[in-house]
Image 1: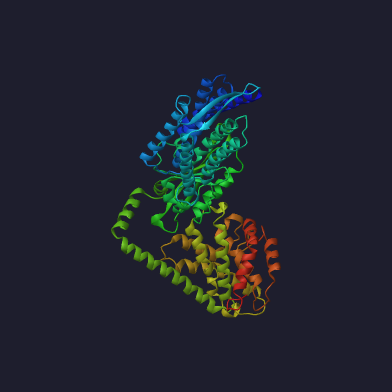
Image 2: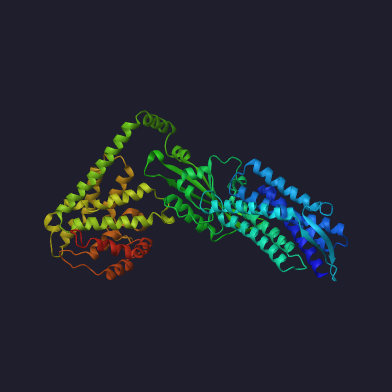
Length: 591
């Protein structure tokens, strides 16, 4: 009696699972899973009636119903895995395997009249009222195992394709399907070996039905088209990337892969490890916004630029982060990043339309000449920078090493800053300009008398005043020398670095007494590298200071001499900075 009640509960749970799947199918079109759940439900109904049978006719009919799962479940799992892995089965094979399974089912259904599947059938009714029957296996009984073996082998093959990366599919989900497949065989095998009077298969089918509900909700993430249908009907102008709630990559569309080609090599169910700075910024932004999930603030916006160092390929993106829900808004399945190319909008906002179109026509008409000119200007720019740096080095024996060390330190510093969201508004071209401009920060010393530059004792007030003048003079020289350089952003950065690298965060620096954020960022960066080198290196009037003391003084000057946020980053780079300085040992650039 208890067994029959349990079977009744199994039927109700299977029915509930099928109902949920049917409701989900209106959103994700996963009809194969619905059909599979219906087959499991019918099988469980068959097991219930088999246990309640009082005659051989009822038992045979109930047995035929119960075998629907055993016959068609392996085939349906194979079809689901083929679809999930985006593999295509030949039509002749689909029709053939379906026909064979139908024939096997009819062989079972005709038991009692024809001994194709069973022979020598006898009905057993146990003292607790549970019915079962004994039989002798016939030919079709064994043929069924051959068919199931083929279906299992193909299911494993599709899963292996996902594992080795031949198909863009979730190996984890597909492996779970195959695992369930094998578990069903194990339950059936143990049941036959130990000759249990109670069928365990219906309980296994119930677990499978409930598991299908999970797979159905999970598969909503893997179908990128589904994820974005709720956002827009037309996908082509927009790029989409989908992550699960653990920030594993789920999928993307063609537009996103055009913007970030490295996505094509990403593994489903694995975190993305981007090399592109913009994609890295997007991943960090999603992690930042996803962690403090708030149901009242479901969408976040971000703007970023791509290919900032190549004006002709420059792109501006507007990114929107949305949460993918299932059922309750509290149940987050994953995150959808929508990217819209807004390049034209920003260009129209920054320039007059007619000038843009005219410039583009001219570029298209003389593309080769423009490329040659750009290359010449770049070479001229680099040659000018190196030439001016050499002039500075020739004036002061300590300055050459100083220029090399500080510019290398700035480069190390910038590589970290440009990955931080706090500085995400700065273009790649800007960071490149800061690195290039670092060698010019002391250019104004060209105008300082040799006896002051080479003086071994301390400077008098008058001499120190002349030395301080190198900042303003350097800015004027840089601006004049670089006036023909086409990259105006670089020119502006170089002028600022030369002019303001001795300003202090508290406003007590020189030449203009700028304070806080009024000091250009590039000058605040240069100030840290410049002072650190002055402390750590040997001069005519002092010995090099130990690294511990140098970093301690830098930390103490946070908020006074230096930008405190930049100091935090600089201190975290301590091991890399020490390694950098050690690399100069044994050369003419040592400290």
